[in-house]
Amino acid sequence: MALPERGKRIGQADKDDTTRIEELERRKIPDPAEFVYASTTIFNPPGGITGSRVVIPHTWAVMGELAVPVGDASYLPGMFVPTLTTGQTATLLGARYRINGGTSATMKVQAGGSDVTGLTGLSVTTTNTTTLLPTGGFSLTSEQYVQIVVTAVSSSPTNLSFTIFVRYTF
Image 1 (cartoon, rainbow, N blue to C red):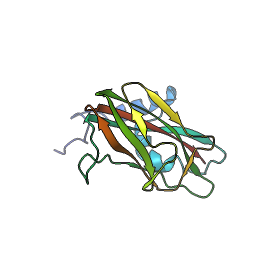
Image 2: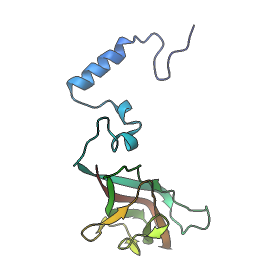
Image 3: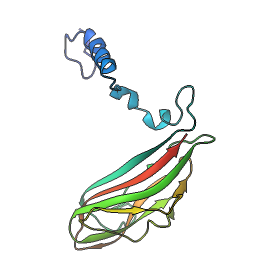
């Protein structure tokens, strides 16, 4: 006897998948399976789309105590800007951040290993704070590495939420 596909119950009929797809289509809800490769398909859709733009939040959620990184210790991994083709752009507009406990952490955003002007020396406290970049924002490049960096801490800051907002045009 063959094992069922991962996530399927033994004896589950294939019509369950058909029923699920029909229900999603009827309710106009996209199938989550379609978003597996969203970072590439959003910007390179079949047939192409031009003249559109969207702002996408990218969030780091860090549980536990924050510390200034030393080598790989306390290093916060970053994110990559999706591959952009001719005419597509990515612009960093600003950030929203907070910690849940402790006094504060001083942080900065880097793109391609360089500090993003306007997003350095950010005092992250238990108050929700938003920092917007000047008109025009900061231009990001295709596949650029973007990261947040802790530069100082005061009284054991914990549980960070840090979101950057990127406007993509395609």
